[in-house]
Image (cartoon, rainbow, N blue to C red; front, side, top):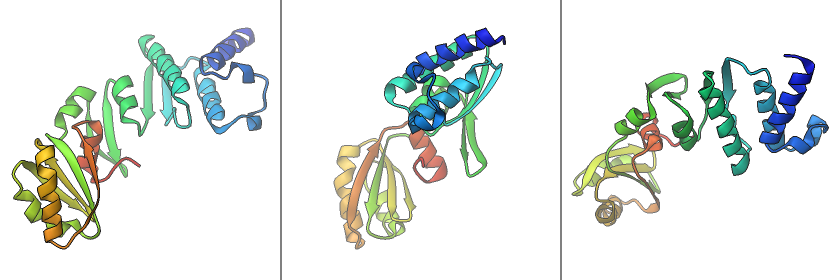
Amino acid sequence: MALGTAARRGQELLERLGIGDKANAKVDELSGGQQQRLMIARALIHEPRVLFLDEPTVGLDPQARLALWEILRDLHAQGRTIVMTTHYMEEADQLCDRLAIVDHGRLLACDTPDNLRAQAPGGTLIELMLDGDAETVVGSAQSVPGTLRVEARNAVLRVYSDRRGEVIPPLIHAAEAKGRTVLNINLATPSLETLFVSLTGRKLD
């Protein structure tokens, strides 16, 4: 790439990533988010055929994140291959043709976003944070009408149900009957994130 072309390409990328006014600034004068955008611009300036990105939108504000999404879509439309890691399930769902769920170096699933979403456990995921080991509550929770699946992970009781409004009170009662206090309740509809939780037993880090 000729020097003039590279300069024009670099300025264009800086503008699209929202830091065009920082073209003459020193790197250590940029904020963390601005430095992240600069690293992305550097990776894109030579228009690579294969692009590897590690958490590319970490530290970006919503506007800059959407701008980067558009750049990545444009690159993909031009026939480039992009391999990226992300903890943002919406980002993976929006941008990727194929997704791989990897946990501690183990490949747990790999397919299209639609096919992976279809593998998510049915019903709403109800997580009850207890004040002690949730394993003692599993048996009672399984007997609550409307529960599809019950799991225990340390102090968290995870219940999949297609009747979330009905099952929460009896689940709380089941926990209390076993001497446990419910400290918090979290609800999540079937999604890539609930599939991740189901496969790994924990939330995204």
